[in-house]
Image (cartoon, rainbow, N blue to C red; front, side, top):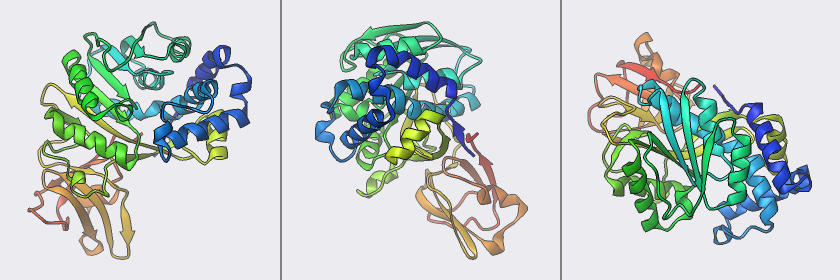
Length: 350
């Protein structure tokens, strides 16, 4: 099952960026160089995070590669919120650190039947110009540093690839201000070990109610092992021009990888008490199928032996990363074998 970035989203960003960055920066070779440079600064050269080799080229890469490749990440938590009827018919949205509009455009694509009142905040005036030209709905843009920018009252605040660029103390302050402004906050971060673990640490330090991806409210078990982290990896189809750049650079060719957190003021949750979140790809060997699940019981490698296959546990056999599983009767503490229990599967994959 695959998420799809609409070609219209790609077309809108190219058209919006061209008057600002120029034709040369959008040429395939130039764009690929800028994409590689930005990718290195987010991974192996983070000391250069705020100093791109070419600022105009970096803006082109942000608008016409990363914003396109990242846009549908927000579709995953949005689908989970919709499943729980946790969003109003008219949604006041504040996109904090909006950049060229990845999260805003992804929201519009994910919520075609909802009315959206949009506010976008970023310190980069040119990025906001691109966003405003690419978005088909009215949007209020505010040029400000997210660290101290006022966040207006809203129904939903989105923080897309923002926290990893801030100091640890500033992350917590920003998320708390977002929660004070809106009943729902969505945070999306890169799926790197360090950035994901930093998001897990924010999760634990906040003490706020977790809607998703966790089915547990206790401390994140991924933090127990310094080499562990929790992230999403969803199949993704990119639009034509972005797919060419992805192939040329070796980036984002077939997967949508990210870590995320949805916070709520109320007690709504993606999973019922005792539900398991699938946090790995399934692993199949002769005679058994295994995957990692996370619940109040912790992060556990769950197993279904071939001899225990039955119509009642088909949900386990079809489970994928990101699914929620209800296992009845519940697994005892420390148990990993599903056995002949009933397994109900709930997915938000398309």
